[in-house]
Length: 78
Image (cartoon, helix red, strand yellow):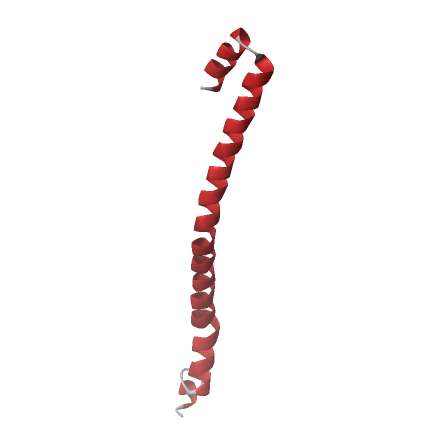
């Protein structure tokens, strides 16, 4: 599409066509950034949730088992 716009621009005023092309690209980039910014918080919440679940499973569950007298003291018959 840009090459076609440039071909047409060669027949008309090149400076004006380049300004229009830059304007179009700015609008396209702004739309892409807006979509990304809308999705970013949901992605961050998902990552934080996975980290919290990992923390609970890896750190807190064994601590709770030790505190409640689980697997660590079961070898001694307590």
